[in-house]
Image 1: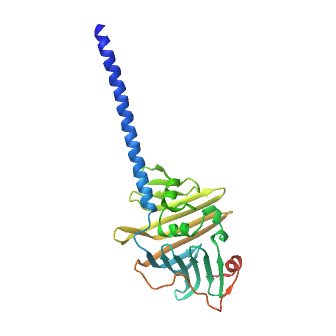
Image 2 (image 1 turned 135 degrees about the horizontal axis):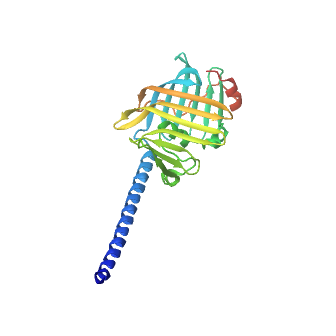
Image 3 (image 1 turned 90 degrees about the horizontal axis):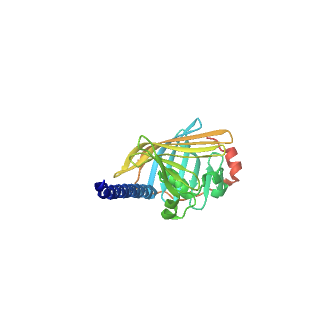
Amino acid sequence: MRSLRYILPVLIAALFLGGCRSQSALKKQKAKEEQESARMIHSLLEAPPVQELTASLSLNLSGTKVSGQLRMRRGRSIQISASMLGLVEVARIEFLPEMVVIMDKFHNLYSVCHYADIPLRNELGLDFETVQAFLWNRLFAPGSNGQVSASSRLRVDRTDQDKNTYIRDSEYGYEFKVNPDELIESLTKTGNGFRFNVDYDDFTALSGKWKYPLRVNFHVNASGKDIDVSAKMSSVSTDKKNWPDRTQVTRRMKQVSLDELLDNIDL
């Protein structure tokens, strides 16, 4: 029994120290995971290593198939056009930092609007930076001012058995699925009978190790209606080319409201 007097404090000390070491290991592991999550988020928020991208498009607009072109200059302009029989351009949408221009060249009509005027703008938080992130395959947080502000709203929510990471925006509720290669495979936003998702596929190296998806599918379900837009890209180039950021409207074209233009446009 006398020996117990000496053994008991040793056992208590061993248990206490073991518990401290276990807690310390857990804290270190958690800190390491948080550091890795922050690194991934910052990496996916960063701009791509190229300033410009152009591509030919095969578009499927809810069953209507057309060809077209995509032109993008980071921070300046995004242009998407649709052509008839691959020859005559019939429609174009141009996203600029301060406005959106939509042209119905078949009927010589055009509309100039702000992002606030676009359908579903409030649900999606649409502005130039958001649209740009959709098409450049980057993380975003609508309405945030810079990477620091965006990263403060983005958190790793979970990982799955296939080692995909899910990142969520705390304000708008966007969820991004990031594969083990740290490429954004999809983003989703749901709520109040509304669902929006974008899927990315066929990632191809375009500039060094940077990979870009050559297939992008958009799906919207709102008010009981489904809208699907899929784009397959080819002849993709990241070289700088001579095209204007803003398309000049011809004198023959008439400016109309967005609703009137969308009622008349025919692809």
